[in-house]
Amino acid sequence: MRFFRKKLLPILVVAGLLIFSGYLYKKYRIAPDIEFPEVEVVDLNENPVEIKELTDGKLTLLVFWATWCGVCREEIPHLEALEGKFPEDKFQIVMVSDEPIEEIESFISDKSYPFLFLKLVGKSSELEVHKIPTSYLIKDGVSVDDEVGLYDWSGEEGLSRIEDQL
Image (tube, rainbow, N blue to C red; front, side, top):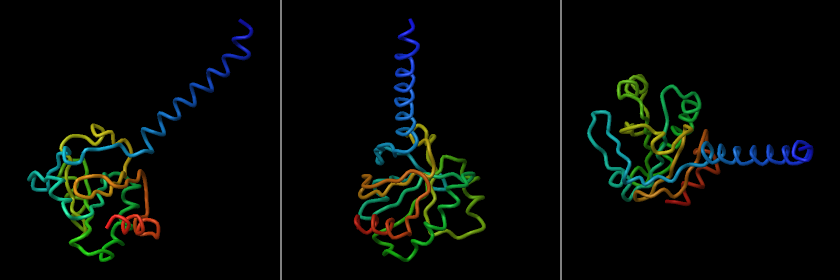
């Protein structure tokens, strides 16, 4: 019994903590694999939008976000700074929220954002998106790059990541 308390118990506790921290890292810092053609979204008039068609021939930065999310609001100026950096027929930004359409409309009503805003049918957690913002670069309906959390897509590294996919 003494061996267990002095030697084995601390080892088991450390091992458990490492496993749990790995689980948390995976859940909250690694973007989940999403089959985007299967994701159901609607525009703000509640018309269905097919992500495959939306992204066909255009590199799309799709961002899961929410109006109440302070980090999401902090990321928006970085996204706005991308306007005009790439041809509109080659690149677009799409913002996806699982909030009610009225909340999205209220948020965007006093400002003209250069993004397309869509409503997710269902909850982002159903897609295993547990942290927002979570961003995906999508080409022809397939994710080619991603980022979890606040990221400066208009910075040197972000621009390079976008250019590499164009």
